Length: 353
Image (cartoon, rainbow, N blue to C red; front, side, top):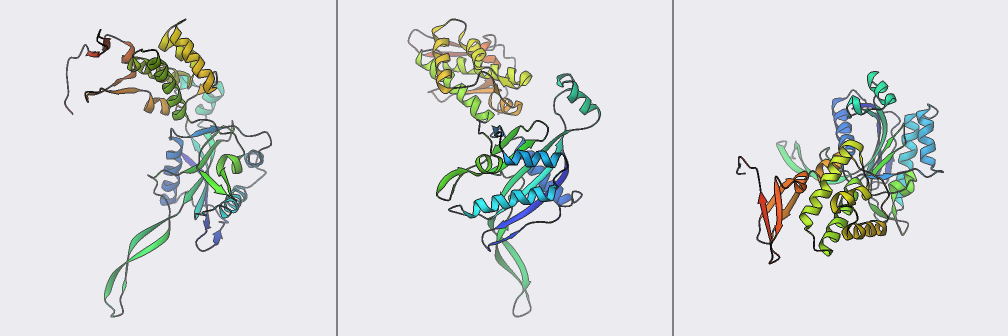
């Protein structure tokens, strides 16, 4: 990751003093660079990121495009963002001191050359990466630290002091942030509802960005899995087999196309022209799922790669989701008494953990 520009503005509601930086952070500074890169990297890799599309009259989208064209400076744009956030948080029922981190950065394409289209391949060849814009609301926390000083006697003394402006560690998750692809204007964000001027609002999508709010990749996978499980359970089918087939489809399709097609998934899990498929399609229509749903590869990798089951006898089994539709590795057999037997096959070695 290459940090082109980064700046930090301070919104201190404890002292009621806001500090708007007039100069960028030093991109060569190791501490600042590491802090910024780690926070941005963590946000990029989160499977909880929601997606959004800018409204046609979004003022933020216009300002960002003006910045990309060189008509607006980075410091000026960041100050406008911080001022807006400060004004909104100032009207919140519980105003929390927050530092606003704004970053212009580039990241390398992760896809293989064979998966890139012509323009992307050319950009990769020239060493040009995807340029993005990040806004992170870093809420300050109180923390206790030791303080070394000289006592009244002149002897060295160690006391405990409370600090009010401790920023989140790079390993900690930030609750509110936005990531915008400056080429496609694709939006990813995370936020939490706040009570502002007596009304519950989402500050990032509703106020700052003025964009729609779509389900995250994780939420999408969970919704589809819930529908599959409900349909299988209602019809008395094996839910473990159905869910593992659904996850296998998600994992394979997203790995190649970065999307899932609910209609295809239903046919893969329940087969063509079956009553189960009819129930599934009715449930998908009721949830108003789009015909094609974009899903991040990382989300599919984490959520859909494996399937875990637990029996009422306390046995837990975790297996690759793709094995759920391959009886050469694992098979679920329903007995005449309604009980289920699980057979694991073609095992040459067992490792105790």
